[in-house]
Image 1 (tube, one colour):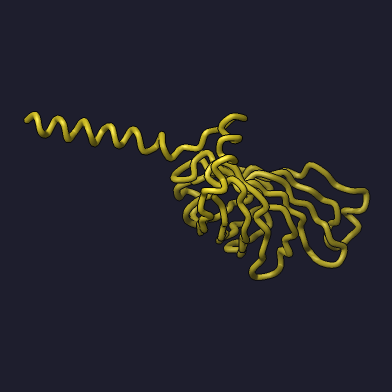
Image 2: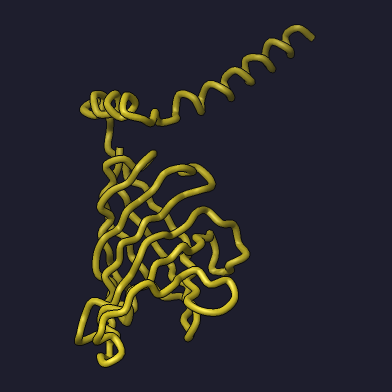
Length: 189
């Protein structure tokens, strides 16, 4: 009986200690310490896959127009029209599937010739292995292309100093909403 109690206590201690060891210190001192240890860290590659749900009107609206230029309504691309969004990220295309985070940021029509958005997008992870971490994107999104490629320009938490590529592919689109499938390849420490 004593042996089982000792084993149980050791397992509990390990279960408590591992998250503490793996967690990333935040705040100025934690970041400074992290940078001092950076030369000894190994760069990692992480692949992520999820779905981004964007609803611009109606029930459950997640994106709102915040700006329109004085020429937006006169151009075929609605140049200058800008939306701010706070969209769910899920593991499956079904909006009721498990949520792993949010896509937050803005997109605006940035071309006179073709539908192309300038996107500032932050993926904020709220569940799972990367809970509390973020990835930042900045770039152009030619929305009519079957597959679009965007730059990952940074990150926080588990994704400090991240860089990489995100590919986006429209899974579903109608007048009020869209579902976009994202595949990410991220380099980070």
